[in-house]
Length: 169
Length: 112
Length: 271
Image (cartoon, rainbow over all chains, first blue to last red; front, top):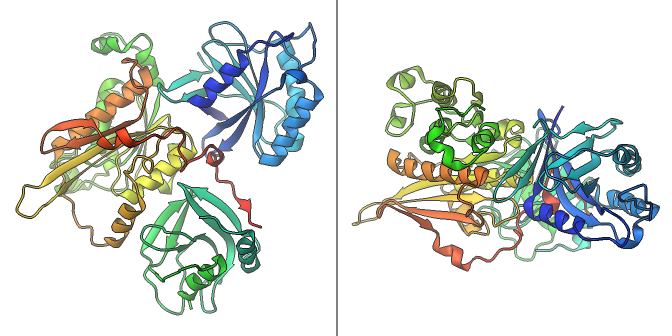
């Protein structure tokens, strides 16, 4: 299963700018990207990111064990957005280093629970998580009716220049 | 051009599954399994109505396949819209201030 | 992708550029005079992944401009896509070349998987369709085309364009290249088109410019390609320059292809 992610450059820069803002107590910020599946009948499925939703400051939980933890309201709002738009939703955050990022233990254990909730709201769309480093981007995608993620083989930032991040680096 | 909820409701009364979409700045209405006039084969076909100017026509009714109708028509157009291939005949009429349902009715008149 | 001696003369493109070129998936819609030039040049540059669409076969009247075609191809009615594959493989034997001897509309799924598309199609209607699909699946599209107009009592006028349609940026409608009037005129001429004048050298200019834009878009070697690309070619004066219309266009977000219309089509219930 090959999945390519594509995100317009203006949206990508908006995400980066928002995630770079400092939070009162959270070490990292998180947000949600809306996305739609494309080319479902093709060899390469496409995940096309269309919008970004910042998590308000007051929807973070002060948890020293975690870089960033969001509360139930943030998750319920995400689920509502899935219901309202029919789009998939991707949890996104940033690790401050260069090179290909890796999901932390917390990411691998907590974020799938968020994805499960999103799948309840929107079983026909893809949901998942996107992780940025200073110069890279990866995406884990739960396709419709799937309980295990696939890794996007390529994520492309569509703009000038065209930037592609290949999972197999 | 915007169409009122009333006009859209009138279209739904003609085709219960009617749905709207847009591409390239153009508004379309998808009419799944639209009933065609008597004598057409097949009797029902998916259709796509463009109620505004489209490539020299004041409106256009695209069908998912070329159909046979009581009067032979010139199937002049094959177009790809909304990631599907559609076919349309050469059929023009004036449509000043017509409602959506009237446009659809006039388009269907070509197949009588 | 091994650079070595083969691409040593294009090391100025930057470290990692050859790998980017080698890993990019390129769609080519149309293998006529313009598309055949592009295919050849892409192979020289080192592109490795191609998806090529054209439903035609080589004919005698193509030989004045169809790059890679031979007299034998015309006798054998070789498919244009097969000519393109042969041209590419003679330079890149290990290239992954997928050919589709049909219109892209008849088999659209492979095209959607491309990182970049070259549109070398005929007519405004074809361009509208290709751009709509490229926008929907967030694929940059480089369009080229030329025409020769015969004018009474004057020399013919040769003109062309190279347009980079970048998702999110101005589309061909925004640029004024596509418009309802041009599409209507083309619709009226349906069936009366006849053979259009075509020659090899303007295709070469347009194709080379397009390939140059593609390489810059992918490698960022000039670090200057940051805005709209709409170039007009004047074949009588032998110039390629930004279209004058650009000074009047101020599009921050394309209104014809908004962000909520990406992906496989979505319909909304009416009323």
